[in-house]
Image (cartoon, rainbow, N blue to C red; front, side, top):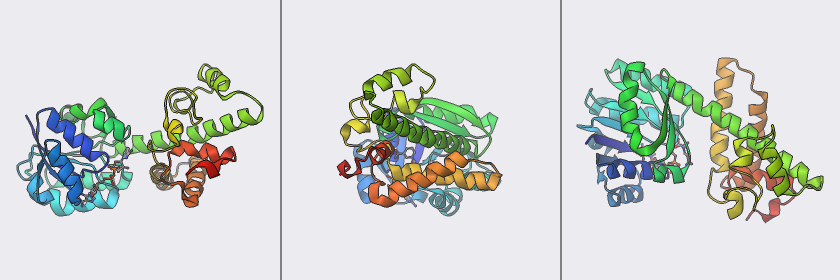
Length: 298
Ligand code: NAD
């Protein structure tokens, strides 16, 4: 049994902390939200009154917070001054690469082992313990990081040194944003050309256009496996979250001097869709705009 401090018990963190408790670990949890803290207590965690209390005596500290500024603040003001130096610090939030590297450098300078370990998979995977983790940490620390993450994971992959997990996450999600927009355009054009969506699905799934956005997450209702398209584009991966990740990718590209014109276009298109008021809809709902059916999105 490991004593784990879990900070950030929202949509993702709530289920992740519950899976650590289910695996038999002692989980001491904290969130600014009383409702989130109560849910964690109901799922087997012990509620702490502050980050400082949660991390005191922890063997591992896992954070699942909204964005870079939250992680920087919680680390600098609460975790680093209060956690034992032996604690393994793992941030699973999706944040900018610079913040991840800065936090890792501060933690290392203070004598801690540290990893960035953002996840792929949404709330359902968090609840089911089937997330994919992309880890940035020193080689010597990876086995210990993997052991802590395993109760929440279907895969834990070492991406490289500090910040590499976040780099992998934003590159993957930029590719996903671009591939989903291409998939939406292809299905909308197929419709205009008189092709049945299920026929095109079968053909594209077995042809060179095949990709996850087509075969696993088809944006057309009633086609392929169950997806948010079958539930009025509710749930799934919100447009606003995709936009956040695309902005992180563009910021990183600008700083690294990388040319990412498709990523920039995806960011602009999702910013427009978000600006029209569809930030809460699944990111595959973009197809309804191309099909002239945007009014059907409640
Ligand atoms: P969320 O907003 O539901 O949860 C964040 C939680 O952090 C909230 O409960 C909030 O009260 C808490 N919090 C904020 N500041 C805090 C502080 N100083 N101390 C303690 N608690 C604090 O967000 P989420 O959907 O759980 O996402 C968390 C992270 O996971 C984000 O970085 C997101 O990009 C990433 N992510 C989300 C999904 C998804 O599908 N929701 C998928 C992959 C990755």
